[in-house]
Amino acid sequence: MTAPPPVGAPPAVEKEKDERKPAKQKIDPWNVAGEVDEGGNVKAIDYDRLIEDFGVQPLTRAHLDRFEKVTGKPAHRLMRRKLFFSHRDFDKILDYYEQHGQFMLYTGRGPSSGSMHLGHTVPFLFTKELQELFDVPLVIMLTDDEKFLHTRNKNEGQMKAGSAPEDFLNFAHDNARDIIALGFDPKKTFMYSDYEFLGGHFYRNVSEFESMVTYNQASGAFGFNESTNIGLISFMAKQCVAAFPSSYPDLFGLPDYRAPDYDSSAKRRHKELASIPCLIPCAIDQEPYFRMVRDRSERMHDPHPKPALIMSKFLTALQGPGGKMSASDPNSAIFMSDSPAQIKNKINKHAFSGGQQTEEEHRRLGGNPDVDVAFTYLSYFLEDDAELEDLAKRYRAGEILTGEMKAKCISFVQGFVADFQKRREGVTEEVMREFMRPRRLVYGGNPNPVKKQKESSDGWAGAGSEAVGGGEGKEGKEGRGTKGERKAAKLAEKKAEKEAEKLALREKS
Ligand code: TYM
Image (cartoon, rainbow, N blue to C red; front, top):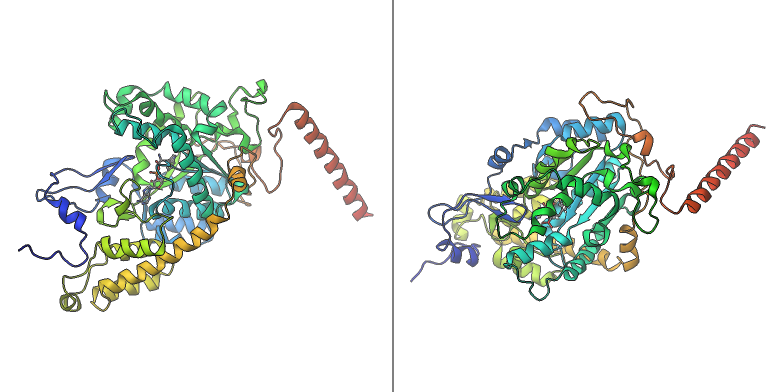
């Protein structure tokens, strides 16, 4: 007779244990797996090792202090708890914002399914908070093309039912609605599907970037081989140049040269956009893309500052800390479309427990919240530090049982997902299309930048916060539209100026 499984241990992990061969941990945009030891056990992802392997920097208390000083607000709970744990040039972005008043935020989603999972909400909720604090423009890229190419590659060149380009475009629309339901401000946010938007200045940046990457470099960073389709090999240039504000002149009130206007005066890159820096919040699996862009951004014909990054750990799979919650494994994930009963069932059945085998042992020895999935999920979402600390303490002391921790997690996640689903119902096609319309974004940035010189001391060119800054309601020098429309806009602007002058005179007299 085989021994009963430990309390809370998911059957899937038990079953796979013997089948797994020893392997190093593997983290890249398409694979997230902890090390597998000689006994076939999957280990937790070693984030300290990742910091070393990827050559990124740890996010320290000093960064949090600096963040609090610049924003005047406490650091986000995900930073306080080291769930956002690493960065590149985050300190430079803070300096830049303090001095010049703006930067561009950029993040994204590869729409691989019609619903996002709980883990995907992590970088988006964090980004939303950064956008509110800094009052800066945000672009959200939906890489429907990447997911089509990756899926076809995974299926060894076959295009299976439900995985044609239009299927991924539909997922992009579904996911766009999910993202909007997290509460982004349409005035400051532009979201796009690659299949719908790529062209104009974006595509010319893609082309220039592609010319700087060899096959060897791409396969070195992403592990491609001779059988990888060439679409996937070259895709990365798109995710890279999406970090350049010069890819989106419309958002900054400058003209693009694409259809339907073909404004030939706008063919040359807008240099003032090339100098605006960018901050990318994401989980650390996306780092290989941004290593590529950082290595090449200053070699663009108009040099762009290296994009800065702030990176999180993965919300773990239900099965435990050796993998990430993943849309391709439904049992590993709680989807934002799950019903309360599904959430309850998944957590009760699959969530790995840090508790002891029996209640008696648990009371005596206590549990381990560090590996307990229910506690881990709460640590991402519960705002109150003291409440979380208390839960951990009482779990360690054996006062809280596994079942009780799971019940707390279930009730929290059910509430979070239900609120989300209610908001998502209100995201109509019209609302979605407004987010996806290229248009001038309206944002204020830092109202009191301390110095506005053209060259900053750290080598980042003084971006045109003066030249292309948002400013609540301010219209750009040359908004998008036909020449006639721009002329009319200029006349209207002059008229408004005259009226303001008249009003001022009247007030004086
Ligand atoms: P995708 O769809 O795999 O993931 C979307 C975002 O969610 C993060 N993520 C997670 N975060 C926490 N826990 C998890 N279990 C988890 N799984 C995924 C990802 O790191 C990402 O931030 N190619 C990208 C789309 C993309 C993008 C970007 C992402 C385009 N441009 C810029 C970030 C930044 C993708 O397929 O993401």
